[in-house]
Length: 87
Image (cartoon, rainbow, N blue to C red; front, top):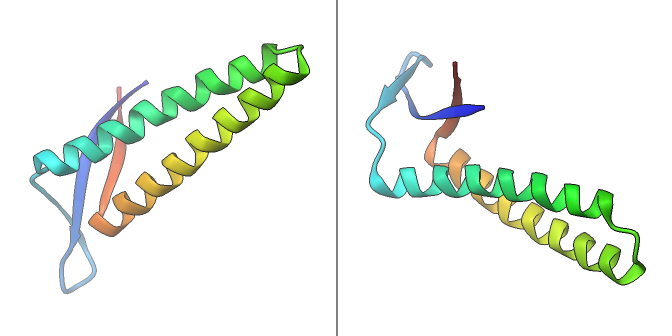
């Protein structure tokens, strides 16, 4: 699945309008996409693990990715950024 970066601003009448993506915005959106992929991989590792120590390790890894992802999603919301799915 591919995504396109969209930076939305709101007009006084409440309508949304696209604006130019800055290099900083692009880096935040790239981090979100990378973390999404990292989350999927961490979840796969956790699902496949059988050893108790590895399960604990993958749980911590998954939690760390979730926290980073939450941080970047909050940054995206503050900047008015979102990922728009492309075909």
